[in-house]
Amino acid sequence: MSSIKQTLEQKGYDVWSIDVDQVVLDAIRLMAEKGIGALVVTEHEKMIGVITERDYARKIALKGRASSNTNIRDIMSDTVFYASPDNTVEECMAMMTEKRIRHLPIMEGDKLIGLISIGDLVKAKIAEQKFLIDQLLHYIHS
Amino acid sequence: MSSIKQTLEQKGYDVWSIDVDQVVLDAIRLMAEKGIGALVVTEHEKMIGVITERDYARKIALKGRASSNTNIRDIMSDTVFYASPDNTVEECMAMMTEKRIRHLPIMEGDKLIGLISIGDLVKAKIAEQKFLIDQLLHYIHS
Image 1 (cartoon, chains in turn green, brown):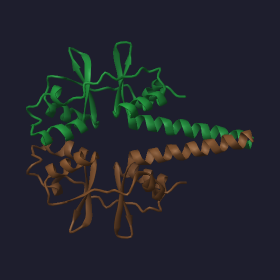
Image 2: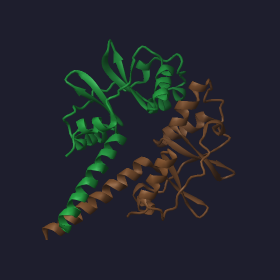
Image 3: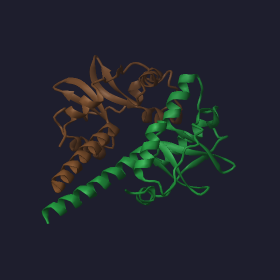
Image 4: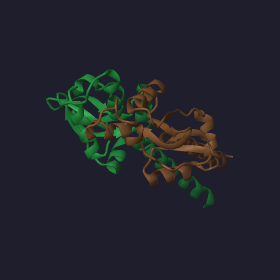
């Protein structure tokens, strides 16, 4: 069972965050710059939530708001869900499925060290299964 | 190797589309209603593109546009990429990776019969690998 630590080593430890008092337009600008779909939201440098492209798609124009004058606080998911680098890929997939979230912050103690998407996890899972299949085929043919 | 036909049977053949002359706000409203992140775009009932949450996140507020008066035509991806139900999961994953797209329309002849996301494909791939692993383990233990 591979751990999240291994997934982070593959994906990289970059995690982009934004202050809760900035406006939504700042968040989608940063997402576009970095080529990503989610940011960790911080207040006084402490993680208090996550904002995603989906939050933007569901809670700005459809609710009659404008991204230039809506605070991130008003549309973010103020999640308390996170995992540790020692959790397994399976544990994190199960948590994300149960909580219906697509991004999971990874905390080491009280330090934010990464943000994992469901896409990162399925890539890790496919690689893990491929490794196991290769091992089994090798065992059968030797 | 499992085919896209099998993936569609699992996922369902629902495919939501919207006319190219509607505005972007109509598209994100339909996505929210259906709980999805992408729509096929049609003109005279013929598929001419795809519009996704990401198009909205990258090409409305950031380009100084408003979703209520921007036509879908102006921000959609006018893709000509699609697959057939007889393609394999691997072929479609390869195409989506190469073209850097996350949604792939499925055409049977000239009829649109589904829209597959990269998430649908990885779920199918994981199930396929699990089946193979179970078969191999059974073979070894029998």
